Length: 213
Image (spheres, helix red, strand yellow):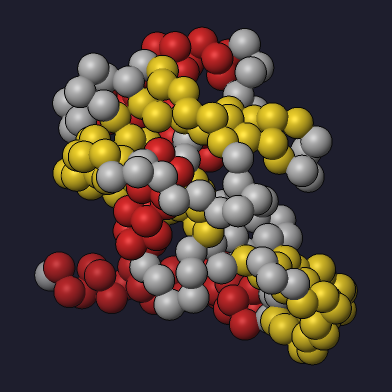
C-alpha cells in the first residue's frame, strides 16, 4: 500500500506546476554552477615580490562578460601567544600602506611550499623571541574576499621558551602584552582596527567561554 501511495504522489507531483518550478530551479542551479564566473582569459598586469595582480575576463549568468581584477597572495598566519599570566603578545609596527602604527597579534606571510603551522611557529619566534607549545588551529579569515585570494590561518599557542628574536633588516617592532579583557576594550575604543586581530579576539572569547583554552 505504501509503495502505491508513494507512486501516486509522485505521478501527481510530476503533473503539477510545482514539478515545473522544481525543474526550473534545478536548471538555474546547474547554470550558476557551470556558467557563473567562468574564467575565459587571464592577463597578468603586475608581478611583485608579494603580490601578483591579474585582469580576468569572466562569463557570468545570462552570458554576460565582465572583467575582474584579482590580487593573488600566498597567504599568511596570525598567532595568539598566551603567557603563564594569561596575557597575549602583540606587536606594534609602522604599516606603510596605512601610514600609521598598528597594534596587532603577531603575524606573517607563508613561504613557498610552507604549511601554515610551520609558518606560525617560525613567525612567533622571529617576532617575539618565544617558541610556542600546545598549538590549536582556531580558523581562517578572508581579509578582502572581493578581490584578494589571501587566506589567513589563525592559531593559538602557549609560551614555551625564549630563544631570541630574528627580525628582518627593515622590521622594527615593539612588543606589548594584554589580557583578553584589555584587548576587547582596545578594539571597542577603536584603537585596534586590524581585521585579523579583531577576528582572533572573537575566537579567543568563545574558546575561553567553552573551556577550550
